[in-house]
Image (cartoon, rainbow, N blue to C red; front, side, top):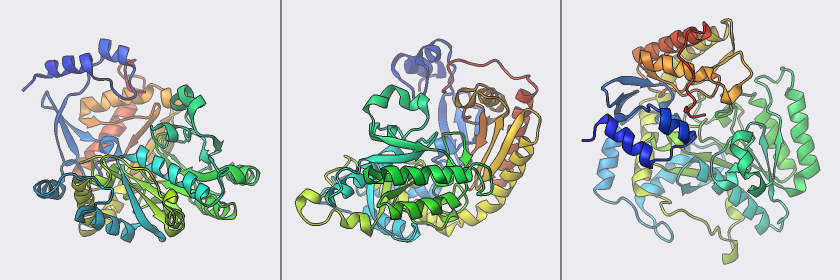
Length: 448
């Protein structure tokens, strides 16, 4: 087995990492080398263990290597791993589609499988474009998204992005998108009426050329865990209906109980025309995603062959992924994951409310199994203080992934109570060190 230093040397010679200034990484980086994971913990090559405070990019909602998921993966691998899905089907995918529809918001009755969150949203974009084309509305080619939106990495999805640091290099090659203000956390807060007015005006002025409004319901994750009022979703649903515009809910992050209920749309009691899910979909075991659609969308592709959705991915309907994804839903149901997470969510809320009251901090907030707080600086996503908290937390045994000057946790929904206590204690200690300006120096190679 290769030593830690051998792995790092090979990595720096050959691997291009996401969101990473590679010159600084190669010259200065001392990355974690992770060898194994179990439950809420990961272990590095030096034998240190860390509580995974962000569930590995929000995917491991049931922790790492949940025994039921591992058993289902093994059993399925002994029968079928993958087969082409065009004109072919198999029990894992068919059963998964039925199970998804059973837990989906009302009216979403059909499932299209893909690879990850970006492609799940890309599928929805292309479906919305072709739906309007099939119905004689070929001019409806634009989209609406929120300021600071992030919906993934494929080129089509990049056009929805409202974070300029991600979008700027590709801005001349992206789909047209109108960005409207993010509403505040409560309808009574300053700015809510203005946000509604901006969305209303955009659809009134450009509705004839807009295919869909795309939203992360209630929480903008990559934007810095920014919460907004569920009432906005209700208004959006009404406006979309009035202007024959699709409403696409990007639940890649917010779904599977992350905000409390199974879907963040449930906070508002609305059903979108399309819902995109990934991340927790397979519990972090395999890359797979799905786009759920209503009959209204599905029926627009029926009829002549030219109306078909000529789109797919090599691993669409992957049998291994489908089997594991079905087991995820079974674990959620049989182990009462959502109900058991409620007390844990309350503890997260207490901690982050307390952190937000400290000098130098602001906007302590929580929703479901999300807790976040901001340093009182103006550096936002490119800020460095969150990375100083990252360093301090590593020393104490927790892996956090800040969003610039926003520190947050999104642990597994079934994290052990004692480990949650440890995690929250580490967050408080680490924030306090940096708040008092005693943290370690900034490191330029950090993922931005």
